Length: 337
Image 1: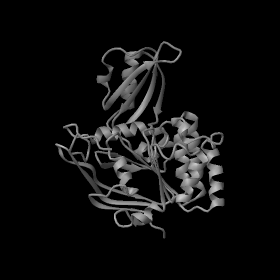
Image 2 (image 1 turned 180 degrees about the vertical axis):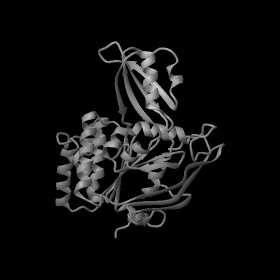
Image 3 (image 1 turned 90 degrees about the vertical axis):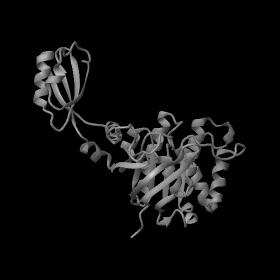
């Protein structure tokens, strides 16, 4: 049986910040990512995402705990890991400006010992896939920011790594290019059942669309980890959209047990309103409907509202903040990515 693609146990990373003492960027992170999984790592700026990735790709050593990639230890077997992985970061500047797109990719293929015939085939395929076919003979220095990011993505897929790290890969890409990337990511993983991707992104719809599982990290600690669908279903509270004849008036909110929050918006194309409300575990939908009927006249519709991953993400982060306003696992206010 093949080892896990990524495995960490009680992983800790601390830095020394000038004048502030030690800063904890990772506070005991334990993760398991099987081969063949597209795993998302989500969190706000300063949560520890990039620090974790840098350890996994052997650019940083952990302060404590262990991490293994493709079965190899990041601290003692970095060379073996580097042969099996690739990393693409959004907004990075890679390569030599005097080289053309095709020459740049050819150079990276030679660095990794890819046979000439195979390298030419992969390059020809990838420049078309990422939308650089017309620019294959263009110098890298003449590419726009978005085109350079497409080149970075082609470089990441070029070596057909066992584990591919995509750190904000769609930064700088237009909508069409980002959609093409997502389509290719799905195709790439489907073509190799053992191929694994770890994705970080601030676009939660992207994670929701692509990822088999996601982990939410903040303050260097993992707050939740599961499939996007199960995270949505396990979230606290139930939401409803209630259409009313008029805009509700008076203190109707006080008459609804378990009401966590409510927003009132105009009815599209009408004179009424749509009330979106969230009820906690002790909430009563019948009480909500009755209160709105008294405050806004006839009830036109009642429908449950499915949560998005973004809703769950915000809720989990809110629950993790301690009374002093610090995120879980955080001992400092220093922003460490």
